[in-house]
Length: 120
Image (cartoon, rainbow, N blue to C red; front, side, top):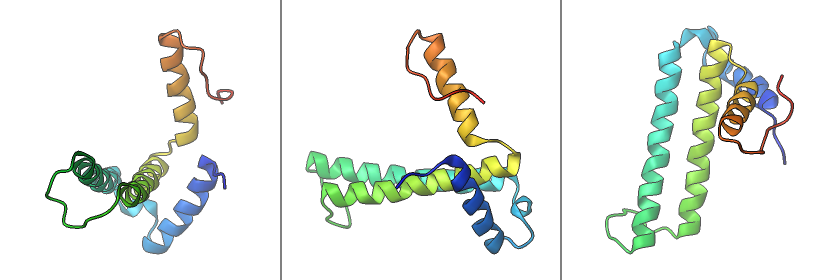
């Protein structure tokens, strides 16, 4: 299954409007960013617990395998992107276009041949 940023944006904002009947603007940009950062913190916690398992350390409340931890990291990473997209939607930022521009800018600056698509 593939997904474009445009598909994510369309469905993400539609679902957001169910939770926020007054519209995406009912939360400020800082509200959306705090939500994304909260999810990033949850991802970091999963990585910490993965590293404990990898290193044979104690401290994890749930004895999960590395594969189970990776599945949980994937879910948290997805939450980060979902909230980051809502932050960008509220600000009128095309996340896909911004990624293409920034990726290509860094590649060009460092003399790397890798580029993403045609810039919009």
